[in-house]
Length: 340
Image (tube, rainbow, N blue to C red):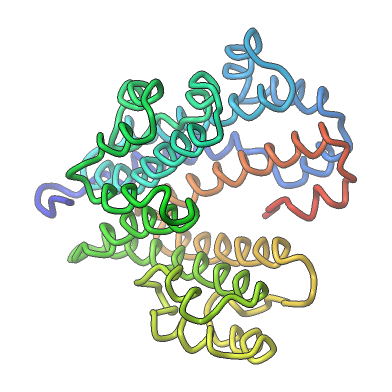
């Protein structure tokens, strides 16, 4: 848990460092150019950017979209680690707490890889080396069977859910593991502004996750009880009671009701693919974070904003790479990109 004593972090320092890193993000207008490039041209383009080191490092071992996948994951992990390393005081504590989401990611990557028969080498390349555990720890799990991996987490909040592998779907277990992550943050009592801004940021992220879950499962005619099981408690405006109200509504009434929430203004919900609607929510979420970061320029918010933008960029480049490799039409690729 956070220690709430001691000096405040020097926010000006960490924000200045992140500003420099933010300049390296690919400008939104560049995506039009990337859409008109072949896969090989995209890789060459990225070799002129911050991704060069990782592409060169892995090119001896991989090619095609797997090279791009692993280079992007490695760069993302290193970027996050750098932010953690240059921060101190409360900034470091908050960033460390935020990055614990990658504990869940890495754990699920290993277990899903094992269940699918993926080689340990391939699983290792997909790990993000940040969070509570070292990359060395994750590597020790790679030769183990799933049962042994589960046993390793005995005594942690993850164990109860991991022990259900084989009895319930992996997606249900994934939901429960992320709930552990969010519960930990929401249990904090933020008596300083830095923590309040962080906890509110997380609560708004939960709203976005929950509304996506509700819409996706409503589209699939999932029962009210089943949908409510998947809801993450503790949202900013979407409390469990609010979620229950929305889940009980017919589709037309539900989509109309969204206009009353911070994330629903200006969202157009039609019969289009749900993934395109989800991208609208991601954009609204990032616009809200940007607005709050500009209101609190010397706080944790500009740092968290950059960390999310970096993840969006990596996801966009991955979508572009695989799309180009598989000859997906440009308009279909573009529809899956989050361009801000």
